[in-house]
Length: 523
Image (cartoon, rainbow, N blue to C red; front, side, top):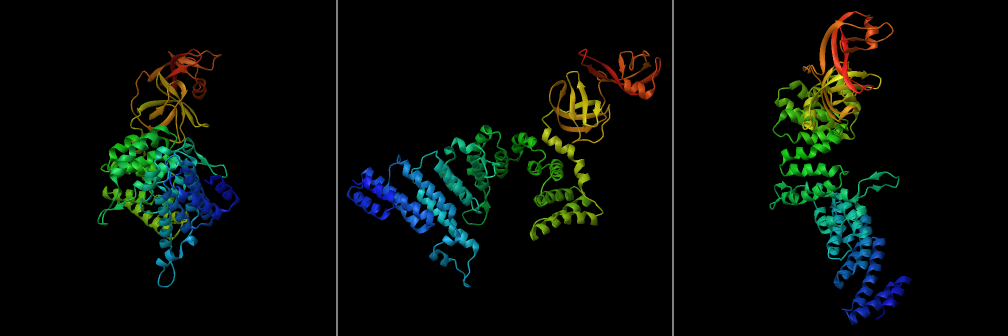
C-alpha cells in the first residue's frame, strides 16, 4: 500500500502521479479502506482544482467518482472537505461558465440568448450537483454542512418554483450548529438575522409558492407540507422569542390553510410589539374575512403608519373595495385614484412622492387621513381587546414634558406620556385607557386612550361647596376635608370665608402616605 507516498505527491501538487499510484492500489484491492481513502483524497484535490477553475463538467465527473467509491458512513473527513468545494463552486458559477453544448441548446435563431434560459441552465447545474452529493456522509452538524445550506439557500430561493424545499428537507433543520442560531455581522459590523432564522423564513416562503396540479392547470400550495412544518415553526418561535418574522410567516401559512380566525390569537403578542408597522395591520385585516368594520379599521390604521408608498398599493385597493361596498363613495374614489397613481408610477420606475403631493393639490388637499383617524379606536380594540379598559381621571398635567398624572382608584394611579395619543389635556379630563403597570404613583405604559364623558364614582370624584378656611400666613386652604392648592388661591384671589363650589378628586399625600381630597376645578 502506498498511502504515504500518495499523500506526499498530493502535497507536492503532483496529482497525476498521485492518481496513478492510488488507482493501482485501488484496482488491486478495492475493499481496502486505506486504498479507498487514498484515492478519495486524490479525487478531493481534483475537486478543489476544478472548483477554483469553475469547471462544472470535470467537477461533476469527480463527484461521481467519489460516489462510486461507496465510502462507509463514518468517513466524514473527506466528505466535509468536499462540502467546502461544492459550496465554493455553486456560489461562483456564472453565465460565462455554461458549457458550450448547453448554451447551444437555448440559442435563438438570431444567435442571441434569453437571460432566463441561461439562468435556468445554471440552476440545473446546481441541482445536479445536489443530486450527486445527497448520498455523501457529511458531519452533522458541522461548519461545512451549514455552509452548504447557506449557499444553496442563496440560489434556490430565487426562482418561482419551490425547489429549495427538497434541499432543505434533505439537509434537515435539526442539524443547525448553536452558532447558526446567533445573529451574524456584516463586514461593516452591522448585525443581521441568523442562518437558522433565515432558513425557517425561506422555507416558509417556499411553502407559500404555488405549484400546478397533475394536469398543470390549477395552482395550489402543498397543504400537507405546511401542516407538517408549522409545529417546527412553533418550536423555534417558542425557543427564540427574539426572532420576529417566523411568527409572521406562521400567520401567512395559516392563511394558506384557511385558519384565519386562529391567526389573530397567536399574532397579537407580536402585533403589539410592532403596532406601528404598516404590514402588521395589513396582516391583521386579513383575519377578518367576514367583518368589514374591523377589516376596514385595520387597513385605516395601516395607512397611518410609516411605509414606502409603493408598498401600500394593495392596502389602498382593499380599502377602496370595502368603502365602495359600504357606500363611502367619495372616500372610495380617493383610494382608487391613489392605487392608479402608485401603480402607474411604480411601473415606470421608483415611486415619486412629489406626484402624490401634486395629486392632493389637484384635489384641493383632500385625502382620507381624517377618515382613517375615525377608525383608530376600532383598530386599537382589535389589538388590545384582551386588556382591561379603565376609566382614568387626569389629576395633574406637565405640558412641557407631555406627562399627565392619573387616578383610576386607590390601588391604581400614576403617570404616563400622552403626546402620541392626544395634544390637549386638562386637569379633570376623563379617558378610557388600556395601561400596563401597577401600584400608585408609578410609571405606566399607555396602549390606548380615548376621551369620554362617562360618569365617575363619587369615591374618586365629587362635587363640593362651602366656605374656605385659610390662615393669612398660609398659601393654601380647606373646604371641609378638601385641600385648595396655592395656585387656585392665587388664581381666584380667595380669602378666608370665601364661598365657592367645585369638583374635587382623591389624591395621595406622599408625606403622610394617605389619601385625601383636593380641588381641581372651582366655580
